[in-house]
Each structure stands twice: as structure tokens, then as C-alpha cells.
Image 1: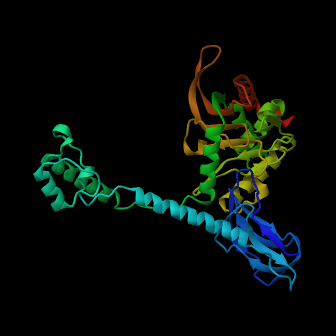
Image 2 (image 1 turned 90 degrees about the vertical axis):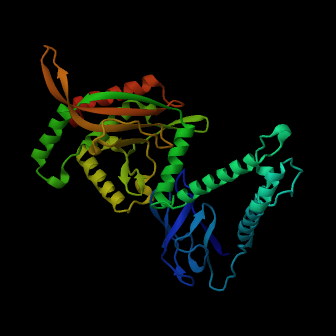
Image 3 (image 1 turned 60 degrees about the vertical axis):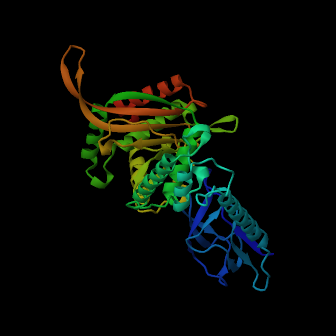
Length: 406
């Protein structure tokens, strides 16, 4: 029996996918597990494999077309096997389209006419007002009266004409056109939907802390001098990822998500690193960070960021994150309050490292490299004290980073 290939749901936030490329054409033989089609999902590309062997009997969705999840995109079957009846799906779409068209026609009919004086209910107006209304084809029902007993006067008609001309001038000014129109689609559309959902459903609370980065900078420099390989140079993000993993291990409630009426503590520590692209934000994920050393974390993070910037992320690269780090320090940002990346329960926002005056125990003033970190937590899952303990642990680890090497 012929099998219908549907648009799969590849993430919790996915509602539709865009067909990027068909690897086969109609009539071609396909084997189960063979690459069939490449799609663009919420935040990345994904190659869908053929679920069964046979002939690609029909391509339902063309390249460039967006298809809702669980809707047909192709049919695979035997060479002489008839196509299954897809008319039900097509009729549902047609039906919905007709309903929307009918609603639009109904709304249009219900709009009041702005012409044809005297076609509605009887309106009291002075002879001069009626004369001007007739000359200008103005519906007296749309004019606000100021005369006794609700009578429309000549000045009311003049005021109405002036208001309409002013409105027309404003409309013409607005209709000069925008500088650019950017479709809300792909990554940008996914970011819009995900962030709106997060802010509307998760009650965010925020914490901030300052970290002396002197020892972290020293660790980074010592590893750089020891290694001598520029390509393997440790970044502050690498250190942050390792620090966050250790803090998450010690504070598992932060490494959790809410599902219906249950709090799920994740068994893996998978940390996403927010990467800003021109078309939007993507969050590739480093898996099982708590089991990896700084060197491996550095190699994986560099590879994922490179794939993200080249537009080559695939589904597995951004799925199953349990916590996210967003660093805007390279843009000279002091601090900011990041939005939680659902279904996660927390995120940290990292600012730049800046020299600030500090006072030593003996009263001496000195300049210290300080970084500000903001924590955003979902108050349905995490309490303020739990978030504070976690953030304080991150501070302690960054100020004593050599503990990460033991």
C-alpha cells in the first residue's frame, strides 16, 4: 500500500516546515533511509529520509513551499500502485479558504457607505448643509451635528470636509511606502513565535551579579601560551560553558523544564550558546558538557558557531538543550535581561569585561576586570533563592577557575 510522507514535527515549537530541496523527482526509485527532502524548520535545516522503499509517486509540496506539520508532502508506493486519495486534505483547505473569503465579503458589505446622502435614516440638516452635501456627495449620516436638536449645520459639513482632507493627506504620506519590507519567515519567524510564547507563558524573574574576571583571564592566557595553537585558543564562552555545567550539576533544579503539571529534571547537561545571525537568533547545543574538558568544549563550540554562521545547522545541532548562555559582551554591552529559551527554565546573559575601581582589604584602590551576569528564571519552576545560589556558584567558579582543571 502506498505510504503518505507527512511534514514531521522536529521540535516542540515547530508548526510548519519549508521545502528547501527534493533529492528525488517523481518516478524515481527510493530506498528506505535514503535522503528524500531537505526542509527548513524553526531554526535550522533538516534532511528527511524516506520512510519506506518504492517509487516516488507524487511530490505534493514543491520547493519553496511551506507545509504545516503532519500534512502530506509526498507519496511513495509500488510502480503500478494507484495513488491514495488526497482529496480530503485538499477539500479541507478549499473549504477554509472559502469561509475566509465569505467572511471578508460579509465584513465589506457591513461597512457604512461614505457617499449617497439621504440613503439611510432621516437626518435633520439646514438647507445650506444639504446643498453642500449633495454637491460633494457626502453622506449626512457620517457628519457630527452641532445645531439644536441634532441638526447639521453648514459649518459641520465644512468641518467634515476638512477632516477628510486631512486624513487623506496623512494616508498619502504614510502610503509613500516603507524603505524595506522583510517577510517574517524562517529563523526570524521562529524567534518571534518562541520569544512571544516564553514571555507570555513563563513568569520571568531576574538576578544580577558582578564577577572579578582576573583569574579567568589568567587561566585563559596560561592555556593560550602553553598550547600555542591559535585555532585552539580558549574563549571566555568556553570557560563560561564549563562553569555553567558544573553549577548546573550542583543545582539540578535550574537544569529542568516544565511539562504540563510536572517539573522534569533533565538527566543531561546540554548547554546552548546563542548565536546572533543577520536573519535572527539560533542556539546550537553542546551535549553532555559536564563530562567534557575545556579543550573538547572549545572545539565543539567553535565548530557549532561556524556551522550556524554558514547556515549549516541541522536538527540534532540545536535540539534537547537544557540551559542557554547569551553573551553580548563583544558588542560592548554592560548587561541585559535575556528571555528564557523554552522549554528550558533559565538562561544567563553575559556582558563585557570592563575595568572598574575596587578597594582592597587594606584600603588600596585598584582597577579590576569585572563582568556582569544576569540570570532569568521561570518562577513556575525556580524560586529566587535557588536562582541566587546558582548564580553565586557561577561567580565563585569564574573567580576561582583553576578548580575546573582538577
